Every structure is written in C-alpha cells, then in structure tokens.
Length: 302
Image (cartoon, rainbow, N blue to C red; front, side, top):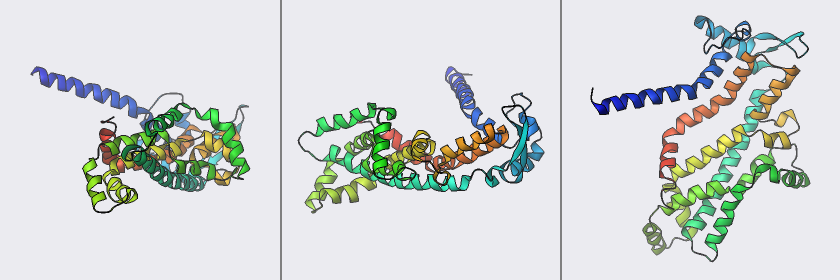
C-alpha cells in the first residue's frame, strides 16, 4: 500500500471516530426515546433498545399512547405520564406553533433588515461609514444579560410581556454578526454589475432588490438558518418574557415538561427532546448544500 493510500485510510478512520463521537449523543437520545421504562432505569449505558423488534411498540407508547410510572424526589412512586404528544400537562403541538411563528417572523425580519444594512455598508459610499460599521461590530461584544433588565422594562412599557412580540420584533432591526456576514458576501459581487444597472436607470433599492439579493441566496440561507437555530434553542428569552403556557416555545415547554411533578422518565423526556430536535435536523438536511456553499463563500474578502 502506498504512503498516500495509507494516509487516506488513516484520515478516514480518524474522521469516522470523530464523527461517531459527535453523533453518539443523538443516537442515544433517539434510542432512549424508544425504550421501555424498565430498560432506562437499569443504570447501564446502552445506545439502542435490547429488543429491536419491539421498537415500534415502545415508540408508540412513549410518543403517543403509553403510560409510564416514575419515582418522585421523596422516593414515592407517582402516577405516570401519557405519551408525549397526548400528555394533559404539556402541549408540544402548541409550543411548536408558537416557535414556528417566532422563527418565521424573526427570520423574515432578520434577513431583510440585515441585508439592507449590509448593502449600505458594502455598496454605498457615505461619510463615517467605516466608523459606524466598527460601532455595529462592537455590539457583538455586549452579552445578553447586560441588556436583559433594560429590555424587559422596555417591552413591559409596550405591554408585550406575556406575548411573543419580544422574541421576534428585535429581529426587525438586524444583528451585527449577520450584517458582517452579508457585507463580506456583498463585497465579492463585482461593482461592474451595479454600474451597468445604474446606467440602465436603476436606483440603489432596485440594484439591491433585483441584482444583489438574487446573487446572495447562499449567504441569505446561512443567516436564515443561523437565526432559526437561535430561535429554536433560545431558552432565556422565553423564560423572561413568557408567563403563560399558551405562549411557551419548544425550549421552554421542554423544561416545563421536565419540571412536572419533580421529574420525568428518561424515555419520555428523550422522546420530547427528539420531537424538539427533529424539525431543525430536517431543515438543516434540506438546506445543507446551500448552507455549506454560503459558509464557504462568505468572509473570503475583507
């Protein structure tokens, strides 16, 4: 075997090991979600159920129609939960609807506002442009806890506490990191296209809408996917602003589900985690090629 072939095999084995380590928690989560309660309380680590032939039955019980018992913090056995989707205490379908509303409105606002700001920084010459862009980038260093209390009182004065508005309205004003990503992409588009469009009579808005945006689809997909992931995983924001179960998002609903009665059987909790994670995995799988293309082509030119 030649040296190059040996190096390729070594690289493939290393990638397989690293990939296996990364995907193992996901496999354990899905595997545990289709195990019976007796199997998850043994304390032995096992990725998949011992009885693969009964996975369908256990999945039906855990996700939909089962009933599992659990021990509370006082050691006493309590009445069990129904399947995750049919539980009387939590409503994951409602949480999913709320999360989709926040994600859809937030992504539309974030992509459009960030793109407009990035176009102004990348394609229009105006006094103080670089200094203001530096100030915008500086805002990425401000942690959310530093603005948490002022934001809460601001939204409270608007009467938005207990509604979904505080979770998606700020996205209408863009985000410094996304503005930076889009600016770097816009800088790679040749100026000759803009000059030709201006000779044809297009304004800056026409150039932005009819030329720059269609050419920037990979970068826009990256921004949309980043913001969707942020909304899906955001726990602190909903915890602060939402106080009614009818407005809970998936991240907050999952915590609420776990806190019910002081504990939750692991198989049902992992079934709930799988339901929360699955839409994001499907979205990433569908947009994977465009996402990687956008990442690879963003930030090449400073």
